[in-house]
Image (cartoon, rainbow, N blue to C red; front, side, top):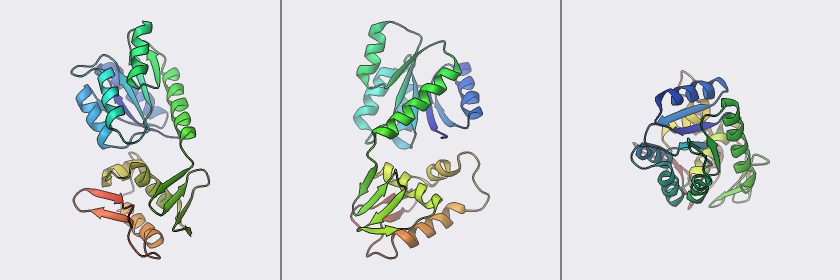
Length: 226
């Protein structure tokens, strides 16, 4: 499954190698070369995984991980990279909230394997049913109900709805939804507008209130109180 990954790494050549390797295997990635920017992106956008260097300028990887765990409302796996192999460094990484640890230099194949394992493990540990107000999304069966009634959505609509639900109560921007759906190859037409309209017809029209809201000038969110 393609992953959307945030890489926080200040070594330019390593970051470029990671960019090439991740793209070659179908993943998309955003990059930050310092802890402050990495933390900002992690809190503002939706990622499946963070690859986090321990030795960063400004705030280091340990502090980034601590602040991430304190502020992020959902769980995002963190793979920490370090040039240090001492036990106390690894323990410090795990204490700060890292899920796995990889010592430099490393083979790209091992990093990719660890990313896939972390992503699968995170999915397995999630509750199959996601509840937002009267909305229920069964991740395993990929079904949707509202007020106990089945909501029929097409595959793209389901992905939009699941992405918004996992980010709830945060507002997602148009670019975030587009990136989640089509990565770096969005359709030429305004396909997102069409899919949002179709989703509203299924999710909101048969019921008393609108759950899928447009936050003008910002993006889209789900309203749990509808």
